[in-house]
Image 1 (cartoon, rainbow, N blue to C red):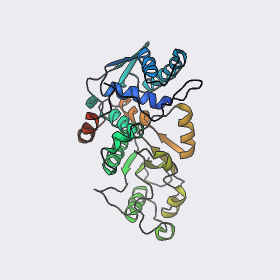
Image 2: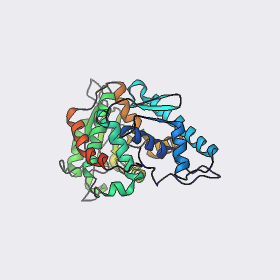
Image 3: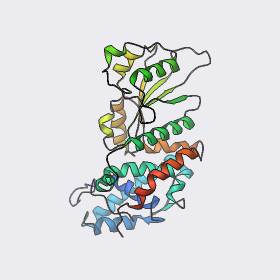
Image 4: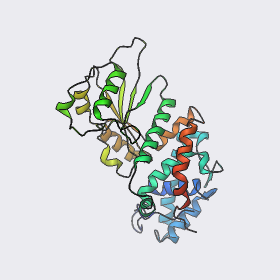
Length: 310
């Protein structure tokens, strides 16, 4: 079993001070990277042993809230979920975390916020994880959005496009003319917050089609990027015939209330962990072999040193 995170797991005596999303991520991670099965009773025991709760009643209430959220998460994926819940027991469905690379990758990205000292062991260069997450988002949307074109546009070490090239890409894909780039952006701009272009063309090849401009945020500072990409800028640098919409992808899993608040801040489509993983509902083995291998290579050294309670 993994050690309890310090973040989001505050002492709860007269009031509940545990973040249910953090607790659920800890349970998911404990299953993916170690335990084959856990029970709600064992969660109650841990909350008391770690001095998060003194009383059985409070610990049971917190565990019950976590159980309800885990059931919601499982229901999102049905029989393709990585875990199953039967009564008061939750079980891992796969032999190894490598058999569920997308889920494991998203949980590890979330852990970087819950286990800060563990994450810092691997430095502060997040370029690779960002590239992998963008590719994961692309492959997920390609499976789920039948008939849509999903195109990676974001800057990376392997694709160091400046904004001029990105704008030309977007304009060419959509058949729209570029706008006044120099007037509305800074000279050193890379991608103006656009990582993925999603659009649904019609057979007539005309403009005025559904378009999403999507930002991928894989780090713990995701909430500071909910306003990106800025449509006010993009409507100036590409002359859209019809107004595009925003989309935002993150590896975190949100409770219902948090999801609605964040979706409102995005002002468009919010794609969280379980929306990404929903690609398995359309195609069970939806990740390309190349991406799966890249995730495993990135994750293996991190899994090896996850903080354990043993």
